[in-house]
Image (cartoon, rainbow, N blue to C red; front, side, top):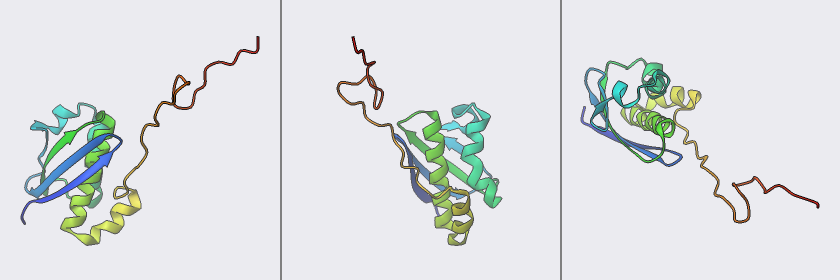
Length: 128
């Protein structure tokens, strides 16, 4: 199997992923997954599609992450891994879609409006 690449996005984060057969090693921005995402919850999020298909020790993954925060980056990485797994075996798409790993979460931060302190919050109204 040659190297498969895929892209995942979430909020402002972009993940480019390169998957090839190997021993289950995940490298993110030239660092180990546990070093890049110290939180076990974020590591779990990244490994969800692999665990669902039971291929945790089958593929080596190299990822480049840019933009966003750590939560957005982990979810972008999850989407990219799911897309790469679908490219490898199209039969897995149904199982991944059922768990929601193939769907791009398009929610982004709403812009701040002029004359307001935040996107929807108004300044306090004073009658007198």
